[in-house]
Length: 174
Image (cartoon, rainbow, N blue to C red; front, side, top):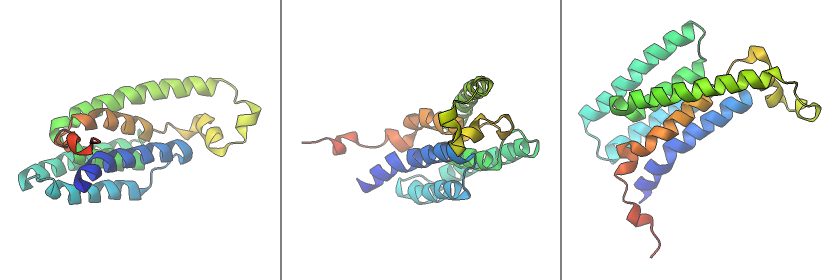
């Protein structure tokens, strides 16, 4: 039951933390990506994932890391976004990678459009004192894409074996 709870909660909690961190600070700590990596390395063998499947998941994470850091080099995304997207890809493997990238792209586009619109309006005086909101409102601050990455991940995660193989009946009250 502890393993099922870890599989059910760890990944979503870390992705939600990444989104909140990016919203409030415009950064995603390396600790989040390392926690995602460590969580995968611990939970994958405990969940019965074979070595070949684990290596395939590592390949998906490595591939996205290369692509994401190319995007970072061009200034299209932040370094924290690149690392957390790659760590999420590690959990999804190739089987769910395209769905994750599609959802993250859609949410990222909507987030960007909403943020551009938000930045056109003056920030109310009583909200201007909030440093995170003033930073979010400033045009030069970029887009906290970690929010879109987390939303995309949370859309795909229920369709993965991480969740599908959990015996929900064990959590039911008698």
